[in-house]
Image (cartoon, rainbow, N blue to C red):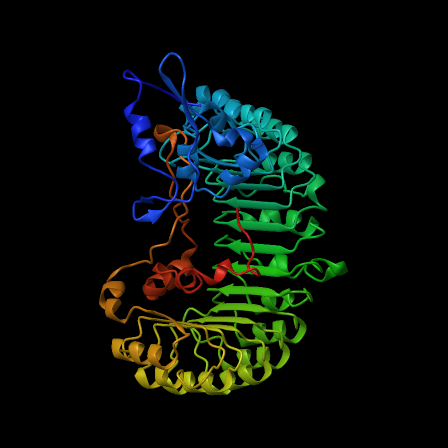
Amino acid sequence: MGQFYSSAGTSPELNYLQQWPPGSQIGGRSSPMALPSTEQNDEGLLDLEDFTFSLPDECLASIFRFLNSGDRKSCSLVCKRWFQVEGQSRHRLSLNAQDEILPFLPSLFARFDSVKKLSLRCNRKISGINDNALILVSIRCRNLTRIKLSGRFQLTDMGIATFASNCKTLKKFSCSSCALGANSINALLKHCSTLEELSLKGLRGVIAGTEPIVPGAAAASLKSILLKDLVDGLSLIPLIMGSKNLKALKIIRCQGNWDDLFQLFGHGNAMASLIEVHIERIQVSDCGVSAISNCLNLEILHLIKVWDCSNFGLACIAEHCKKIRKLHIDGWRINRIGDEGLMAIAKQCLDLQELVLIGVNPTCLSLSLLASNCVNLERLALCGSRVGDEEIACIAEKCKSLKKLCIKGCPISNVGIESLAWGCPNLAKIKVKKCRGVTGEIKEWLVEKRTSLSVNWDVEEIDHLDASSSDTGSAREVAVLEPRLMETGVEAPVAGDGRLTILKTTLGVLAGRSLMACTFGRWSNSPDSSSSI
């Protein structure tokens, strides 16, 4: 494939290859690979045979899929064939979509002509792409199934409508921090009849007084809706109620009284297909939470910082939603949810597998009932709670099926940890963070007693962690094709209403730190977890 010049009959490269027979030690490891055959032609050039020529393009593309983004780019520089195969086999692409990227798009998509998942990001301080760029993307990427727009893009209703008409096979649409309005969303839903997932975050164009947003042609295909940081999220109620096969609904930091939405659940068998509900920092009372119980097939429920929810609303959920497998509750330390609500869950939701309690104070009374009735409880997290050694001992004694346990910011001591050495026979992983009464010596003792147990400890870093105002999240690397055009924007939260501001000030520690992200940084990778773009 390549050629090297030889001036004296034998080139230095050939001498090097001859000194490297198969099976010799290279870098401390034996190399069993056969060397390429070498021959010199009449002009003194050394020919090296490329054994990958015998591989079909499909096989070479399959090999590239096992490589990370950096290695793929390195392989694409080996030869023209690898360059072509690598580009044609790349299905996922992420670009820094500043406005000056437009001249580069034709050449980019001429190389990457099989892209199915596209992410267009731009720093919110910089102007992003306009209608011309988005339409060009829709023309070049006919097989596009997923797109994510994040940034201050200069898009109009006409541009979105043209894009949607060209990408009718789109299955997932995510938009963040854009100025899209009701007309744009309606145009998307009108043309994309196969759309399954819709994510709208911080849209500045969705305001009160605009026309209602309806599911259109996607009424039968929509399965997941995420609404986050919307000023007038209530204008999307017709979209939610019109999605006949909706399975997942997530509403996060959206203004308005959402009791109006949830009270429609159950009317005429509405939302019967709903499996997952995630509500976070929105105005919902017990009336709205109890209305969610009309979703009889509900399996996953997240109640995060819903300050008006109490034991009554949780008891209504437990009475009707008996299929719940995952329950996450962040009570925000206001003691409106406690033993009464948890005991109702323990009595009715016997299939519970995962329970996360943040700012909730269970006692041995509710914990023992959960352990006795919910025999499939495998994952338990207690964060920012007044759980002590007595409660940990109760868990160790009665939770026979428990496999993963997380304890964070609880007033426990070494005595409580010692009880875990003899209990929870199926425990495989334990995480202890910011528990001041626990010392590092008990960790070594626990590992010695249970050698198969995976222990995650940060006792020595307590002071350092408490000094920080927020947890640091991990980020996945994305392909950087044009270094000067690639940059990941940072999404800023939208301020809530007055009541939320007061609670944030009073409970600043919890408001500024994401306990949920830290608790389930790894558990979210389980097969039962919902996917994201």
